[in-house]
Length: 92
Image (cartoon, one colour):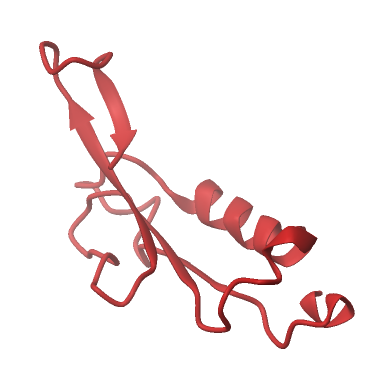
């Protein structure tokens, strides 16, 4: 879809390949990765990003996707009470 805006390719949005089936993950990131793909494909304001711009979503399971090769990485973390934010699962 970027071609109609003058850009040459869609940006890479990745997620953990075992999302939704990994018993160790604390967050299923499939919906986040799908939304990121839709946004990067349809938001004209993002066409100025570099060609190889990568975004990753990691649910903290057995297989990680957050290597140094990603420009933005969202890693799920579980925050316990007493750390200055509401307890729950958040992205770091």
